[in-house]
Length: 133
Length: 41
Image (cartoon, rainbow over all chains, first blue to last red; front, side, top):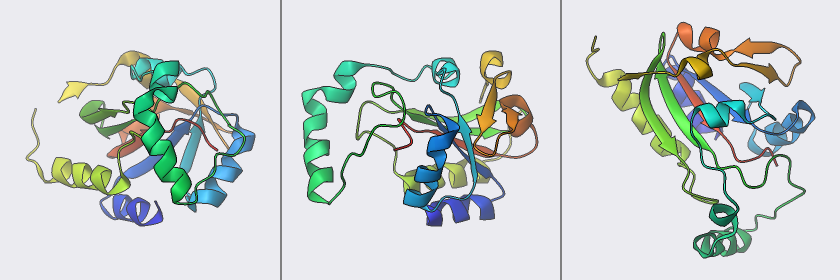
């Protein structure tokens, strides 16, 4: 994540992480990922709803996610105590000032997140595209 | 490009340092990548 965060900064954009846990849990995220940028907390899930991000037990526990869980476990990842809403899925927004949506991605389920390198590629493409009114 | 929902721009969220940030202010000045994570831990 650190490499992608550095690249996003080099491109003149800000990377903002939004989570649904309380602020006291952010230290753990920073420790795990090394991310030193802006982290916002949304325990009410208001921004998730505004982004129309999925929230579903099935998408979290369904059979499509079993493979993701097994792979993650095999790579040594262990789920610690959950710090947020377990059923809420995430997503990505690339926004251009002052209020434009340049790219939007909604996680399909647990393990269905967008890789950091793919996010950087989207940002590079958005910034390379000619500006439209 | 479509326009961001007013509902999103008007939201104020808390930073881990204690301050509050209005998303509309955050997105006004420069490009931004917002990543909503499933949970912090």
